[in-house]
Length: 611
Image 1 (cartoon, rainbow, N blue to C red):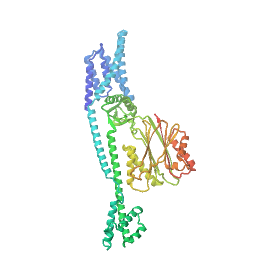
Image 2: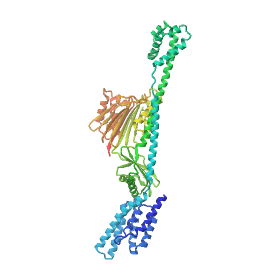
Image 3: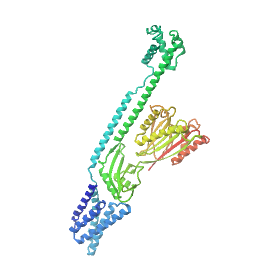
Image 4: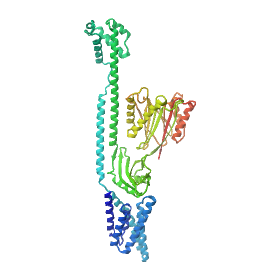
């Protein structure tokens, strides 16, 4: 703040020197410099005093009166504009200064019976004042806003990015360590069967008189009988009756040996189950570490700070914002991997409150790209400094709607859904169908949707979000409680649509001349940590509809090919409203069920339109 005031004092003192500059007997720099400096809205009283002081000592009284009147007119125009619209455009102040100077000069010449050449000279002086104000205003603004902080800030950002990359490498290395440890144990290997044989024989045969006869010779019948016993336990989980009768011919303790073999076998099987469960948990942890490494690497590399390279555009932004009565203290411009820009600014209103759309106009004009404020940004800019973010405006806008019915007799639906609109120009539709119906199925699918929402909001991509969510559901450890996942991600910048399906029903795309069906055969989430996710990429155009349905919608159409029937239903519906599309689909489905709702039914519909 002290540096800012010092610069304004310097600008005001330069105004004294401007009073000395003459051109063809005129002093056009006086009104031009004053108008340009007065627009900066800082130290105005001191600026006026300096300019009056300079004119009093350097100009004759007759000439001084003309320029004092021009300055007065400029002050009045600027102040009135600020009272009406909270800001004043440079061209308006320049027009006031130039027009007042030309009129006053022409009036003086007319009083002195001047000729046409002198009147033309007055007009030229006014034009010179107008052009000088426009040029000097840019110079003064650049001087006031100039700072050396840009390069240091860039170094700081690069240092943070490097630290994030180092963290990402550490998590990735830790994930690799867990991955190398994850080797599934094969039950009843040759070594384990040898250990089991020795354990059983050592416990039961050590006190038997026939021990040496049974085990000293490798080709004794008991060797073969015991190995066959263990093999039958491995295959059927119980001893073969014929094998027991055969063993009784050689061993008087056959029943005890079978019982002991079953006990040892069950113990090893339990140990193996716990070991494999540990392996699965290691796989889950490795996936989660991979996800952490991904999000850190994504944060470090996804956006590049280009503020220093585009400092001229940011300077122009501050200048244009100032014309609209907004003071931009700091601005940071980021370039994403896809080449699109994101802007973050700290701004405050000079006088009162100003609509955020005024700053939006300045941002778009300065950057040369159509920019829009973030979804949750404030609608007004006050005198207190606040941070505002801007994204490039997408080519398409998305509209969406839902229609749902609860199974007859059930209190709640087992289907849950979500519409997400992150800040990166995406529209994400999520639908999850919990196995069964009622509150248990609802809770299960609700958990799936909530986890996906949290991960997407945290910055994870869909693939990573679903994998981490699935690992969490696997670790939850409840049997027979699974949910389908159906996700459609639409890029509103180019219409690219990615569809992710895990045990979900078909998705339909309605185009101008056809309805396309996308089916899935994968398992629901939570069944196994090795996720089976089907991914499809499609291109959407303006006016295309995307329709997602739960299992209950297709299952009770009672036709041999329900997907084909649904294609016919969607194709027959004529509407531009996504909600109407979803409701009419359910109405047609109820015609096939006789008005009954035998299962939870949910239809999500979305359409994109060019802005």
